[in-house]
Every structure is written in structure tokens, then in C-alpha cells.
Length: 116
Image (cartoon, rainbow, N blue to C red):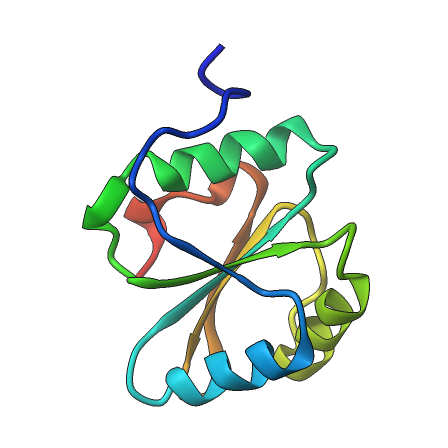
């Protein structure tokens, strides 16, 4: 089953696992768009959404993509919700530009063709 298998694409996630990385990605957002994917490793819809993003490979619209395991790093997820004023959902993507969330989507709405 392709939805649940490990991705074999060349998609390059950066792990978002601490407050310093969150601060760094916000700084980066002033020069480039940044994508945050809030992922639950226990959720098949989250895995399907993650695979859908990864299947685009190296041709993604946004090159700086950060993966947050919300089960391991709940405090980072809460900080994102507070800082960007976007109610938490899982799975969820946020596009950050100039330190603001300019787009967010969750569940089956997550796809590259919807991202501005």
C-alpha cells in the first residue's frame, strides 16, 4: 500500500524539534517561504498527506520544509498555534512568510496544487 509505506522520494525534510529551530525558520521566512508540516505518526490520514507532499520530489514549490512530530514535540506545536494564530489540527501545513502564516490547510486539503 503506497499510502503507508516509507517514501522513497528525494524529498528533504528538516526536523522541527526545538524552539531554536522554530526561531531559525521564522528568520528564514523573511527571505524564503517556509512550510511546516504538523504530523501525527499514529494517524493514517497524516501519513497519507505526508506521502502526498513527498511524492512531488524535488519539484516542490517551497524548498524549506520542516516536519514536526506532534506526538514527540507537543510544546512546539502549541507554540506554533500561539505564534501564528492558527488553531491546531493534524495533519496540518502552514506556509510562513515574513514571520506570518500566509496559508494553512489540514487533512485532505493538503496538496501542492493548493499552496499559493
